[in-house]
Length: 177
Image (cartoon, rainbow, N blue to C red; front, side, top):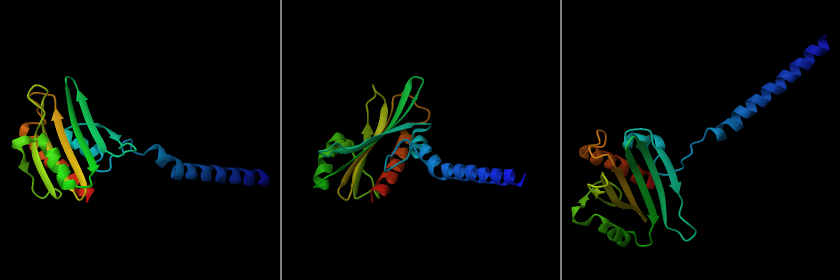
């Protein structure tokens, strides 16, 4: 009888050790986030877009290029997108000047965001409305765009877009430092 109890006790200890090991080492790998955007996470992007979003990360190729994080929220008849691109530049000021051509004369300086930043409208009336920030932090040139395809978006109004693009720019530029 005592032998059965000691065997049962050893068996329970082994099971407890295996469960503890699985919990400590196996479970965290199953629960990690799918998006690995280094500058903003899905929860923050979802808050900026006004609802649950799904993120995707595109790494630069072997020859270099841009790293792109794109967060999308889709609903009935609309799509909201937050897109972040970051690239390393050997001459970041000149690269930023070249990229700023996207904004044209509508660009306005955005203070306290990176080393240099400007904000302008993105999209057009046909495809939807949006806001864009172009800037740099050290040798990294970044572009952040928030666009909605909903013409009279109740969440991303023009005022909300302007406020949320600044929030996104603060987050991204802070993480680039």
